[in-house]
Amino acid sequence: MTWTVDPEHFATPDAALLLRDYYAEVAGRYWGRPATTREIDDGLRDDGVDLLAAPTGEFLVGRYAGKPASCAGLRLVDTATAELTRVYVRPAFRSTGGGGLLLAGVEAAARAYGVRWIRLDTRNDLVEARGLYAKHGYREVPAFNQGPYAEHWFAKEL
Image (cartoon, one colour):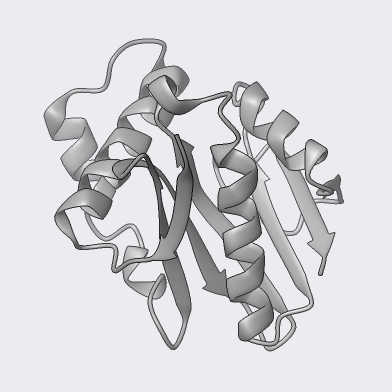
């Protein structure tokens, strides 16, 4: 089986379902229970996803054997910096190498925009994500925002 990672508009049916799954998992883990449909809808409403399209960013979808399996967003912060966001690999496809390929795709998109740095924030409970970032050269850095869910900050020079 093989992975592909390509840019895709965040509103396509596959991308939209991946974003719902992403939010359901991160919200559910945060609250310690499954997120309701209403909570997912509320969380996705006006969440800034519109910045994950040119000219302010990009959204990527990873497919495993043709099936939508992962996603990630890139949001330009300034001419030298972009932010990595909404990184998600569906549980059935974890540990198959897709996370690293997804990060490589985002980094390639960032380079195409002329970006030199990618940064991100994440939470304590997203242990797997923190491991993925560290494995692929992202280093913990001092806080660069005060987001309500930001507990760890990472950056990588391209």
